[in-house]
Image (spheres, one colour):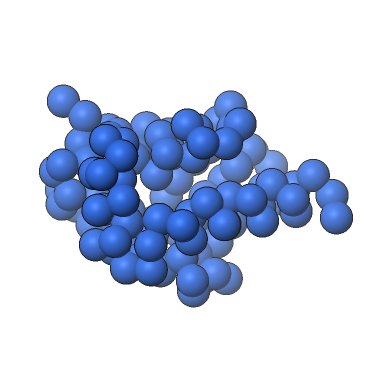
Length: 105
């Protein structure tokens, strides 16, 4: 197992811990006062990952995550990880203005 594979396994585990549904993900973030701003590197999911795992940069999008922007081997695609559907749904709806308790002021 190389570094990228190990990193992906850790990040997938961390994301899975947020919950199986969009609401569970939102509740987890709110309970821990994790907030973010609109944007790939500043949304609550990026803030969560940067706070609990050593990631200097992470891009979060509705398609998945890029753990090392610019490196194709660092992609985690939601289509390949159905166990992360709650995280994907949270991101999609956050981007559309939902989950206001997760927004930094």
